[in-house]
Length: 635
Image 1 (cartoon, rainbow, N blue to C red):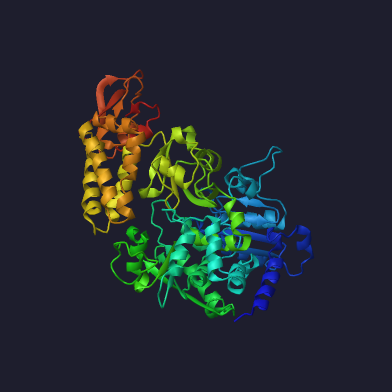
Image 2 (tube, one colour; image 1 turned 30 degrees about the horizontal axis):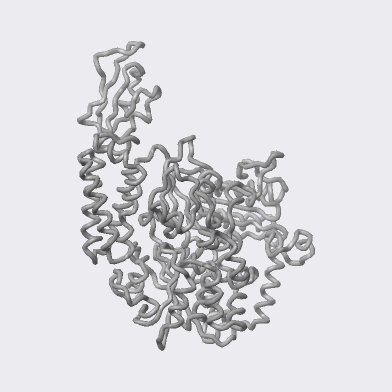
């Protein structure tokens, strides 16, 4: 067990070692004077996306190559969490000169070591392409992707080694807990969280301080603090990335929550499908025990708090807090009737506080910097920042954190880089299967809880998927509804049966078999499901259908008339050859997987037979159109 004095010595010693990473307020001049501090730091992204791109191999090869050159003492190689710019991964950043390498491959390691780390000249072909007005490559924080962001929750992701507790301590780690346990009463802590205006980042946006107050006031001989890390929205990876990049931040926040509400035991419910997050949590919990931070006398300040992991099996419904509690108890993962709410009767029937990962990610900074500091960020009713997983038709796909109130345009055009290939932005889906589609006409909408609700969408946990002109909005609604139908626990009839009937009706639309009357019936059924389902999964499942009906009703009507404007719904698509453009090259016929293309008696200008597509054989895969060198085949 470490004493408070020993922890402070570790902070100062590690801060000095990190100085060349341009952190902790130090300067390069300070760095030069620090004996034992590595002159150069090479940070390799160790998030899930970059790991799948062999970043672990890159990390290991860098260490091996530097050892061969005798530079392993002067140059430190660190595996961090997610940098955020996932579409450009694997990412390697070299400090203190801010060289920002993207799309790095294991075979690039030799060049980075020999040309840059030994020769002193960055490898230009690997540098991120953005340059300033003087033609100089931009540092990571100067790029369009990062400059509009404000990283509070993600402050340590891509900066520290998540498996090294000393580096977390160097960034004022566990100082917030030390502050509350030594100088604040539980009620003072709750009042500070209330004053900050922090709202739950799991989707509904309930006031965090009130939730803490309810659990604090509940009567019980034992209480629990639970972290909901069962992130299951398609395209969402915000919580996973925070756990992978800064696990101690969540542990410390749960300790603070436990102190505030009177709980001595915490549970992190995390998907077993997130092996990197699970591993780093296990390492962090073990380190916290070794340092005496977790245990019977946390930090020697008289408060008992311990943590354990519960692994989920991947059921989307377990993201609903009462279903999560059932699963944590070893029961079937399905929601409970409320009231009583978890604050009164939660895990094992005891008063329980449940917040999601991102909500906890804000707590230490509120305590250290003050509620007033946090409340100045964002909007009047939506304080602070929000983390989003940007996906879909964007140049820059990845993880971002923006102040509440930032417009959708800033996210899509400035941070996201716009739609690739010059395509027009059509819509953005926020909130995943629970949210709604925002049309291009509302691109200047501020992203905050109330603004999104007003236009028929919602914040959700933070997935944001962008569509361009080639997307069919009816097909998009069907995609999300298929997901929720598949993930329904089946406990209540409106969700179990209602959503299935809704999907059947939507399927008729995509096949051109529906009528305008069917569209009206769909809308009526959507409202019935919303009003009568037991939990949030069923209550929000119709949102993608309702929002697309609201803003893209003309596309539904076109489908009823036998046409998919985007040419996506296969039942309404047919491919044909333009005789005036066909040159009889046979490329389409050779690539057709079902031999649906054959010669005709007509001749092209070059004398070769013109081709035609047999609609009875065609499976509408589109291969012929993509292969035709003259663009003679179209929908």
